Length: 425
Image (cartoon, rainbow, N blue to C red; front, side, top):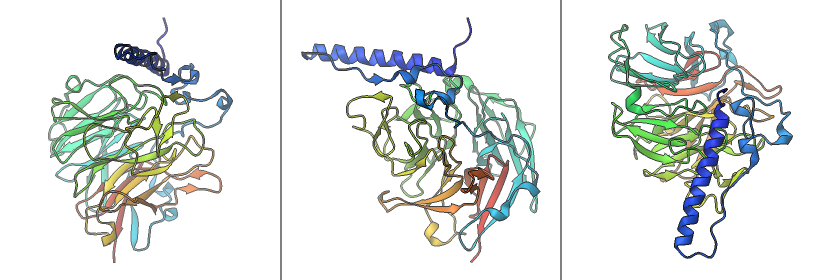
């Protein structure tokens, strides 16, 4: 018997979860003496319709001939002379340099105590190490042939790598390049689906390791192990689910003063050009529900999976980040190099849209709020990657890292480059 596709498996899981939830609700209603059982959630047939590719799941029949599709990554080295730095734009006083190159597919970055930078990837299956030699940087591959090892975190000089189906720890690799991996997969009990299961991981202010598990679909009722954020002790013990209803976060950081976690979340596809928008969320306490799959963005009910009052009890975003903009890395700025107005502001990389007839994103924006985390203002910061005249793009900013001197490193997944943003008065 041929294997079922990820989408078919997710759809079957969605139907089972829906039936189980309805059965429990029905039993509760009858025991309480209700005259009639509650209505089950409505799940459109489009959710479970077989599709050729996972990203097509959720399309309506009238979208079957759409030419929209995920944008192909460039998984070969881009020579420095082909990286158009002169067309990228920053506010006055800021400067952009090509800090490192030759990292096809480079995404999230984590810094060891001795200054080495580790970079995860998705499609190419590698983790890179960047060594700063002063005027130049050298790049080597630490590990290869993993399944979407986007998640990298560093504690001291020890590297943690999260792929879809493996967790590897490289003890003291920053000082010992020949360090062999310790397999920690069993301790973290990773769910198996690939769709939206690539990860951004990081150690929080509490010393815990924070790991998201995205929904295994575009839109479905996920199983209990998906659409959530977890935290663990560094050895994989003490697992807690700290947020649910999170479709696909691949970027988060902690406010420098309040220590609250803020995270991006991607909106679902195939509900139109203008929504649902991506989200920037704030976690004021553990255990909040952020709405997936019933409620999106600023209170938008899902078209395909419906229930009464879908946004009741849902924590709505601090800001929306644009429809299908692929909001990725988040970094609060704590340095002293940039002007004072950037202190504690957020930098958010928006890798850019594919599920939209007119592209948006392909930039880095700043987000500022009041002292209570409200009244968010989103402003452009690093632009020039997208040519709006013909929808062509030169690169795709993905993640942001702050260096000890207060400069920022920004990874470009499309060009396999890392840029350095500095400021001089």
